[in-house]
Image (cartoon, rainbow over all chains, first blue to last red; front, side):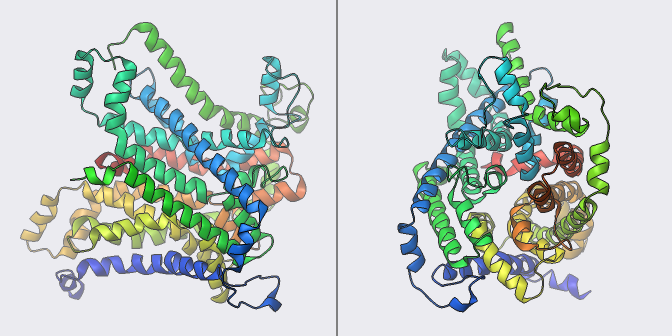
Length: 298
Length: 277
């Protein structure tokens, strides 16, 4: 059999890898390089008369002078930092609880993962229904509990829109941290807890000196992955607020996406994409280096 | 740990189930809305449980909109995505896991690194390319685009499942004279089927749920998937709440079912890389 003979050659793995490498080159690498070059070109689908010529750093200059860009950058920072911290803390707390073999924790572990698997569109609408200014159940509950005097329009008030959207995103994203951190907790050897107990370490000390150091690699990796998707994906905000009211929830990825899908300004959208890319590269590089995880690898 | 006092344990149990409630109640509430008649939803005095539950909203979205077409488009796109990832991705994952060659680590880093490329930047050239080759607004074109973020994930997860198979099994087959190809087909493939199913479920959910790529790359009912269609209905027709909730419940039903079926293996696959570091 010819294929069987082929599998004995040294080049065999490359035959197996070739289709995936080609596909990734076609749908990721090539588009990304093209996107980078587009950020230095004019391209507006609704203005073919402008052509697609090279315009140098025009879009980048426009960015620097675009107040919406700076506002979006600020909102992106709030959005990403707030969500990452919120999701991490809730995820860590959940993982610690799940690790204690409480009644029903098997079932709880499965149910807690549900939000993470739900589509953004449905997740967004579930919360939009619950937070509705006229008929939302959360307003109803808060008024009954005496927290609010009257129903509040969470997504129409610039002061609460971003915060309310963050609650939705945290609901959607924290199971990711819970899942990975729980796996990490289960891998910590029992002797470490026992020796901590012998040393008279309390709960906080055990967390600080035993648990967190043991989880370090997982924490760094999961934070990097989560930050990447939070920076890149505007879905939840697109569904909940579309960037409004005004520009209170406008983040960079959403701004870029609206430039592309509403104004068909591909050049400017690509320049915004480049900024996202550079920010992420910088973040990943600094964060991974700062946390030293690569040095500890054998 | 287990040597704690009873009150602490009770508190911890309450805390844990509060988190579960936070996760599940929005889904439950949406379900309740979907079985309430419209006048019970838009009433000034909110009743939590439906007084006269019925399935009118489900009938409404299924018969009075193009929802069935949207769902079938999503089904086709999702199936195509899974087929592409499962065939191409399994070969790659096998190669990286079971054979030794220079550049293995770099390839895995490449598959990890491509996650960093902003979707917004990828989707523009994809839009132009797909339009040029006539695959814009097609379910196959959309499925191809989905591999940009799902194939790397698939390969990483599958590699974990391949890694878990002891190498002695393959070696034994090789000593018996089987070629590497035969050993792969007869020995490794049957052992990795569970992992393949779970990884496929993960990819299927990813393709089924996607909103952003579908929004950009589909323009008509011929290929439009349900997230885009549902979102359009909300914008255009001021969709009644009950109908929107019913649409949401229908579209998450397959996700919840697949997740329930595959969750154990799925969790193992998702966390395998994490524990090894």
